[in-house]
Amino acid sequence: MGFDKNKLIEEAQIAMKAAYAPYSGYFVGAALLTAGGKIYRGCNIENSTYTPTNCAERTAFFKAVSEGERDFTAIAIVGGPGGVIKDFAPPCGVCRQVMEEFCDVKSFKVLLFNGADTKEFALEELLPLSFGKSDLGK
Ligand code: THU
Image (cartoon, rainbow, N blue to C red; front, side, top):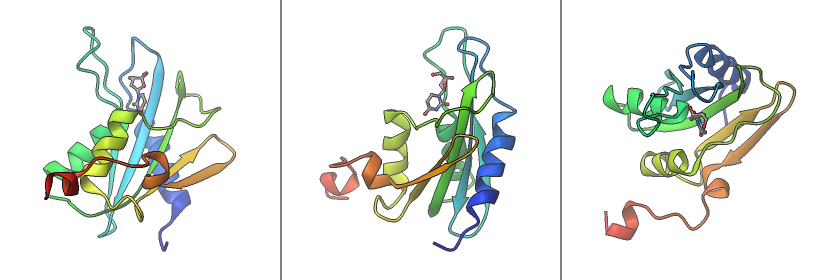
């Protein structure tokens, strides 16, 4: 795939700096690349009542979709306690399902970075046998 993976990972690290995570202390940043080459950053945004918390990945998607974007290439995700990246920060199940709504599961790529190594997955590897719009005849 012809996109700059290092740049996307750098953008995710910048995004993580804005994380609002006073309850878990776990900071997450995501950078979502559109087919047109734009990058939307997202961070996790927590809430004192917990339930309204929004993950970094969904923040990035909702920013992009609300700006009219519908065609996505890849997302990079980083995270860690206190914003220190030591391990991979895999997307939660809800975020994987949101990706499924807007992305081709075979071609959309998820990049994870642990501070040293990068892992790359096709969405279908992270969400096998997914339920999507085709199951509703859409
Ligand atoms: N979090 C994300 O931002 N993305 C994920 O996919 C996993 C979890 C956030 C939510 C919450 O603010 C914190 O990490 C701990 O769960």
